[in-house]
Amino acid sequence: MFGQDNKIQLAVLEEKFKSHEQIIEKVDSAIQTLSETNQNICKMLAVHDEKLEQCSKEDADISKKVEDIEVKIDNLYKFRWQIGGVIAVAAVVIGLLPTFIPTLTVVPMSDRIERSK
Image (tube, rainbow, N blue to C red):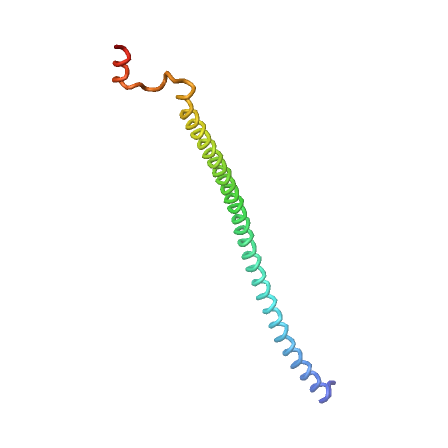
């Protein structure tokens, strides 16, 4: 039925089939490894996305706090200049009071006694 030539061809085909099976097993193993690696990368990306979102929220909070502090500092500068203006006006008014109201000047007691005699 089968000749010698056919047996040789069958043996060659069986060897080739075995080598192809080994290659397919290696490809399957590589695909499985790539799949696991892909899953790990997806998990890492999810974690990094969460961290980035958290950092952006913290950055927004810090920016808001900095803006609030800047507003407070500006208000303090305005208040400082207002106080300085009030003090300057008070100094001028106090300095001019004796000129406009001479009765407010303090007369020593000895001058009062001499005038009453």
